Image 1: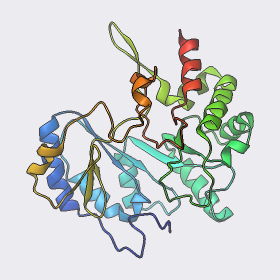
Image 2 (image 1 turned 90 degrees about the horizontal axis):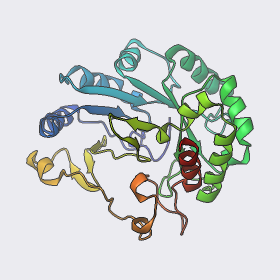
Image 3 (image 1 turned 180 degrees about the vertical axis):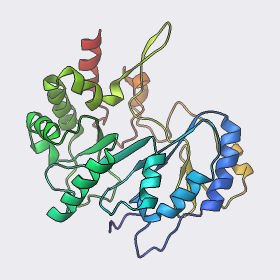
Image 4 (image 1 turned 180 degrees about the horizontal axis):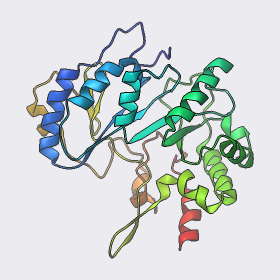
Length: 292
């Protein structure tokens, strides 16, 4: 829990302003009048477990759910358990090759907590190191640990969390995922490739877009990101209505995106590396062909 990129790094002495957040959320929720999910993530959000619990206990709206992404490398106190119980989705990160864990003791603690908490999803980061292992070995490892609900994260070229790692080539990622998909049993495919699930209604059979927007991101230092527009929770509340608007096209998108035949399916929020698109096109076409 000493990542230098984290907002809650000891050198920064940054704490989330809960009261300011609650005021902003009240305006935001009344404005959109729709179901909302509040996701706690970091760094390690449980370093501010009391503040998270205060947020959960002070939001009294009907259409709301909470989720959290957490290291699970700590003692499960009563406060921690209260937060975990309030979250509909609990996600943790895992690397079967000990890239993430600095000691066997940390790994053992994490495993015990996983068995206790039983997280809904496990996040796997597609690092250069991970792709050196065969998809079959990876699948067998997940089976041993009983992790059948997995989603994948690509390394962002601007991220600082894993500076010592080399970024994988997006084509390499695409090929690896295709190989993994080919050997996955049917019941595993549903969970491993959650982003490719279908959305059914009465008349249409539609694909979800890959990736999703976070309409409103509030950082512990008081900065706010609304559809690529930077604000602060200390700004006037009416600025929220002024700046908030949903967009179909992200700012700063690559010039090739608009002419891509898969543009309508793509909403991936990862930077291009050179001239290679991060969207797993081979995998997506493979799945579409199989479903058709």
